[in-house]
Amino acid sequence: MPILRALQADITTLNVDAVVNAANSSLLGGGGVDGAIHRAAGAELLAFCRALGGCGAGEARITPGFRLPARYILHTVGPVWQGGRHGEAALLAACYRNCLELANARQLATLAFPCVSAGIYRYPPDTAASIAVTTVRAALERLPKLKEIIFCCFSPEDLRRYERLLGAVKKQGFTS
Image (tube, rainbow, N blue to C red; front, side, top):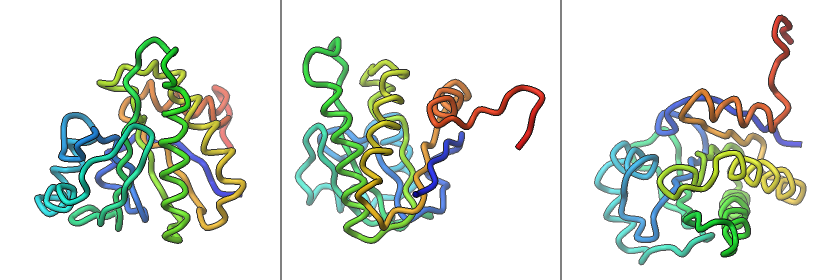
């Protein structure tokens, strides 16, 4: 079974086979994780993305990592939260599944996800994290190439959320 772990870091600095970009539908950069990845990867990423013609919610596209330590970038467009009654959960789960399937098809072993849709798209963070972890765990059973999945968190609160879901929170006063 692949290793699943959470860490608080700048996703643009991770030395993994691929990082996931929580992109907008144009794939041409934006704010948050998307802007950070575009800035760190360089102008070549923007030029490459222009040729892709965008990406729909729940879908994923792959590009080279350009100036990132990661060899590839998997771009996925998460759903905008509209109260939870417009298929948001299914679209968010599809983001994770489609990225994992692309990574497995390319025989990538290590992949880092940000908290997709939990920023400017206003998805409730607890619900988004639960969907992420549940979807990744279920999908990995049939994707043998993947060896390590990292949930890369921006804030200490996000890290605690993912650690709790992964069962990795250490009891106070105890170490492993």
